[in-house]
Length: 296
Ligand SMILES: *Cc1c(COP(=O)(O)O)cnc(C)c1O
Image (cartoon, rainbow, N blue to C red):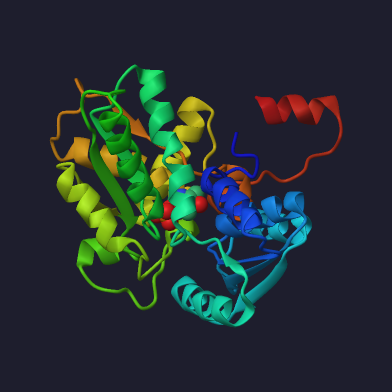
């Protein structure tokens, strides 16, 4: 159900349950926003404390509002997400808090269930699974999930894993760390993915690839899925749609393929991006004449 509006809940519920079994009383994570919202919500429910270390000024407002309202201790740092993750990993050594980033294997165990669910709904594996890639935990989890399902005899084939990064934050495409990652898709604004090697292995082993798409392509796909389908996702979630459109435009024939692109986060988390793209109309006098004129 992803009650905080992103897939992070699938993994967070597992990581927090395991932390409680071990007797943990506090959680800590670095986050571009959604991990913080999710950790804060499950910490609130479980009655444990939660600290979230965020890249200052780079978190969509809905996510910040969630973390604050769920009652997490929010710590913005003057640095990137990658700096925040390094600091978080160091801080857990000092505080004994439970690290709930996707370097925690329980996060991936939970996120694998999305692969099972897709196969159950389709009655088999898709031909292609397209995902946005940031810290690269999710693509790693899906690939593990599809492999586990095949080993269990639930599916006969495996999909190709197609990951998409934003051009300004594409370390796995460029083959090197991006020191100052930049993109409108803040959820994937990451320059040194913790599970980068595993993501590259998933792409290679599955016959897939990790590619980059521009912010313009991301925003065009973001507007298209909203205006054509009535689904408002957050910008990062539109990266795989943008990537599929680009691959189709480059001549890749997807017409006979079963393709799944996962919309990873709810568009309401980032109203600023939506409003910066839209024309917000000026108010008119409250009269029927003016309303009819505006409708004409
Ligand atoms: C976290 C996140 C991603 C990226 O997932 P990774 O596991 O970091 O690769 C993509 N989209 C949204 C909305 C996210 O919150």
